[in-house]
Length: 277
Image 1 (cartoon, rainbow, N blue to C red):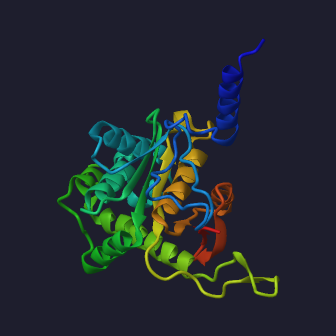
Image 2 (cartoon, rainbow, N blue to C red; image 1 turned 180 degrees about the vertical axis):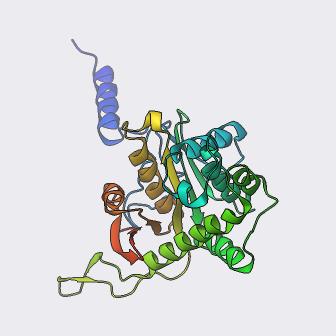
């Protein structure tokens, strides 16, 4: 005859498994619970994609250096090299140096996203950091000439090409600012139950994808999309909108796969934004 005590214990275990399926899985890769939105206050927190780590730059020197190298390799065929007159065989140093300059420029560190395989990375800057870079570009034609990052760039491009590179940084900042100032296209429910769109853009702080890339050998594996999804998760974690300037219509379609919306154009380039719904 079955033991009543054992039957009761089995029922308690089954009940626990049914109603608390994640209680025994603390290792799940979720965002820091102290920074996540609760179900009562907003949408569920987005998961950081598997294989992607969020780091404070230089907190893991090996991972940071690997990320900088990956970003340099990711843009070896970029058309900007013709404009910059990049020295043959030194193409990798241009975007590696730019990434290093961004990571080293601020005490309040940018966000660094890296793939565990070391083949891709992304640098996210807060709007105040990007604004600081843009202000320095306006103040002097060759900012950061003594930093490791800009010195690395100067091993690859003539000194008189450095202002052109920094002007691209300023243009990227202006594009991000344009993205967050555009009216929101996210519908909200009115008291009568109908949907309406916000007529005002965001004011204040936001995150911007400053640079994102995957090495040529690792492209086609979905790492770029995982990095972009991680950028969206980081923005939600920090409670901020996310902006990016797309290099073209095809790139805009790629950003849209991670939930970003095209909200306008800055010059010839689409500008994209993600914001919590």
